[in-house]
Image 1 (cartoon, rainbow, N blue to C red):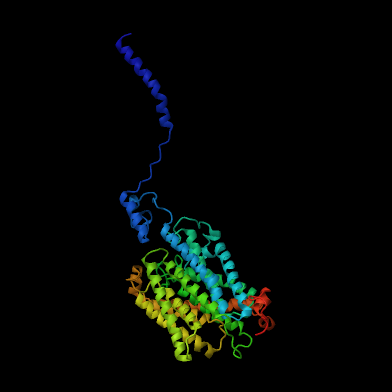
Image 2 (tube, rainbow, N blue to C red):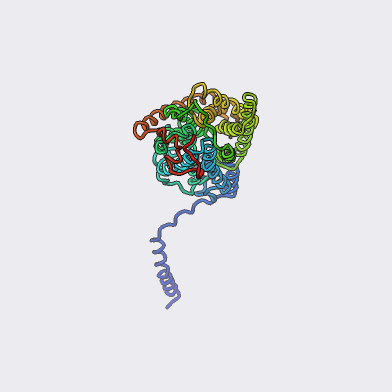
Length: 492
């Protein structure tokens, strides 16, 4: 065999060995392209975004698609921001249970204290069920300008990923935080109808009111494409701002409370005898709990542990303290002595007034808002109620209706782009007109819906407890138990 023949044989043998591998390579599908890795600059940018509560590189519309990595290395919730919102959610729930229950409970007569506690617990349970069922979806899912859709019904997609409430807040934590607002809002109405409205009527009223007033109003103010969401919807018809619930929480509950107490009627003996609080110590404790919880209410509404939250924390403190001082000082001038009830009423009033502007106004504005919050609601409670002779038992309208309305208009005057840069374009266009429109819209919606719902409940199951049950006390007649064992609660 010559050399040429040997070379040909060797080549053929090598080809026979390589052929199966070549065929297999041809049969094997091409591997998918590896996702683009984050550059060191993008990783640093994501860390900065977390610190500044802004969008990640992957979510930032200002970054070109070809320059984005497939996924951020910090795609989940930011631990600090998420932890603050979980804490804030607990604080807002603390405002209702036990804060509001004790605040209102101390103001009623001893034979009705458990009825107030039961109403607060009942509303907390009912609203939680409605929120999980469809309420959260109606507020925060895509829909139209007035109401959301059903995308998040039964908490579909409400998990530990982010996007529904902020770039660094998990969806489930955001939903829980917002649920606490939904719980306390109708619970505030209880104060106007205390000591005479049936428990069954309150539950029926609240269930209908949430769908007619709270869910649509919260969507219009805070939801995507909301009719009055000036910060979150460039196409909003009314470009108003509401940091933590001046319209959504306080105006809606306060004006609804006024209408409901008028339709319900007065307590037996109203105007002929005094209905004095049975425990101002309990009310004072409840006030302290409300004040502490309000930091979650206002500072938590920044949806981050950032400078806006710090500003809200500061303005909340100043407004509450100023109003808590001014109210009893006015009592001293008018009545000759400052009262503990005056300190409590002033503190809550100041907290109500600052709520819509806590993250929008500076410290000096907060002092002015606290001053006015201690004066105007004081005269509404002291004189307006007596003049119009309506039985707003625990002054829900005087504090929340009047205070919430006052806070909404003052926020339009004092909102500052130096405090919150996102306000710049809205301030340039002017906020006063937008806020007047938002206030009128809120009042009309709350009043009309409450009239319809109240008469519907009245004509079906009835609103008011009988005179006999009212005299006996709602604790015994509605719940079969006493707040203080052994007391003769049937004696007025």
